[in-house]
Image 1 (cartoon, one colour):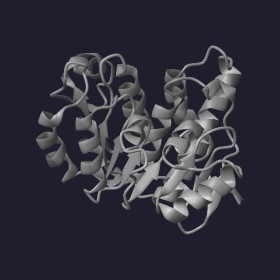
Image 2 (image 1 turned 135 degrees about the horizontal axis):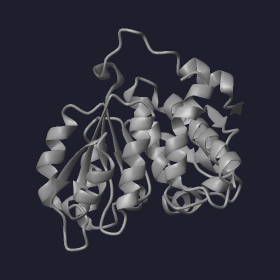
Image 3 (image 1 turned 45 degrees about the horizontal axis):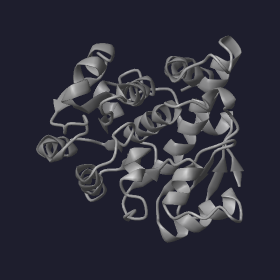
Image 4 (image 1 turned 30 degrees about the vertical axis):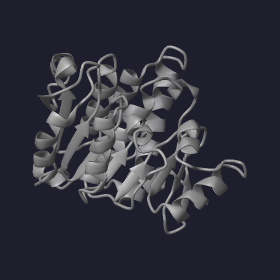
Length: 280
């Protein structure tokens, strides 16, 4: 098992060329949020922006569009059809399918809720061929039915168990067994988060603390991993960089604000400093 270190992240995130433009750093398509969880969409989209993606497009249920768009001018926010609970419905699919044609990576799940329409949406993403970061309700909508595609899964232990994972012999053994049967990159969140590759490689994170144990932290991580995939990292390297930088941003917040009072928004705003400290 390899430790994720400062030196590894510096190698994965070299300085940008002086001649770079936004097209060099990829397009992230994010589907997130529902009535009552507009914060999840903001955390995800702004983490992708702060993580360095060239363009971030967000498809939002129309009932929360104004809230998120007003707070995230850095993202291109579009209002989409939703059901009475503020969850994306089937009428949103044509716009999503069109956006998939130009996306370099998709992130699906933070705050989406659960419904039969969202199950179909997750299936659409997983069959598109576009690299996908599947988090939170994205995982819940397809628990036990993960398909083979360019996929990063970011479950906590409860979600991992619902996906069919087995923790009875420990996190490392359970994660290895899961990716052998379900080829994907698996980010098993928790203390010293583990990142598994289907080729057998495993990395252990060395950053992060209890200040990140709050609702919304996973949404930040999902958006950050998507940003790194958009910039050309492999899913395994992007997930490794994501958990390290996310944890380091949390460590910075714990020192400056305190582990009890810090919020996921604080973590998002600390991402640039964490990247600067690692040379990214």
